[in-house]
Amino acid sequence: MRSALYGPGGFYVRPGGPGPAGHFRTSVHASGLYAGAVARLLRWVDGELGHPRRLDLVDVGAGRGELLAGVLAALEPEVAARVRPYAVERAERPEGLDPRIQWAAEPPGGVTGLLFANEWLDNVPLDVAQDGRYVLVAADGTESPGDPVEGADLAWLERWWPGGDRAEIGRPRDEAWAAAVAGLERGLAVAVDYAHTRGARPPWGTLTGFRAGREVRPVPDGSCDVTAHVALDACAGPGSVLLTQREALSALGVSGSRPPLALASTDPAAYVRALSSAGEAAELTARGGLGDFGWLVQPVGIRAWRPADAPAPA
Image (tube, rainbow, N blue to C red):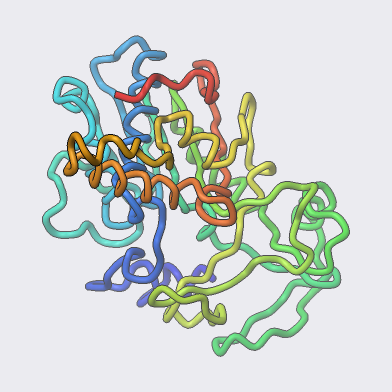
């Protein structure tokens, strides 16, 4: 998985490729409303920090920098002027990216602000276990049983994924998240992803592939994304809050409610814009879709953000 995604010619680092947006649709690509919601969350963090002179915004798994560009555009100029944006991504910096955005291969240290990871952890490589043994995968996707699972991996399974016939050993995701959060001195860390919790682990796992907008067999040859849902509850650190995306975005002003029909008579153009926005919001918060994504919200040196703390939409 590591080689297929991040090795020479890997899916995420191949020069000149279209990036994630060319293969699957994330919340970032679905609507600018998502960046607007992250901007509102950043304003809340800014207030909790006392409006520091430098406000860090770290996007882990930044793709081609689309989320950072959207957040900067959604902020008031006086707030944006204090923001220091970082894109954390293995691929090369894309041409034409806002020069304010710093590009890095690893999360920075000394961060004061918001660390946001949208669909990053599902691409942190992991091992799969079946019937107590590691699953070995050939370059063509053929699987065979490997050595028995033992040590730290076995301990993780016993604690976080007991009783499953097939399981994805999420320990590397726990460690990757802890390492990213360790760079946050004060602020909020948020991970958003396909997720499940201990009481509802999928009995046959979730490992799959994506290519050109379609789900495909997860062949580890660099030709497709190889991904698995995240055990977010295992990643959660002290003071963390687990939410659905529907809960989080609704609190941040993303509503799929249709505009009043009367607006169509008084201001038809505004009605069409509001209707389009409602459709995009509905996609971001839909049950059975993006709205079921998990949000892991972890505070460092401030109180945890909860929907009740959300500011009114600007």
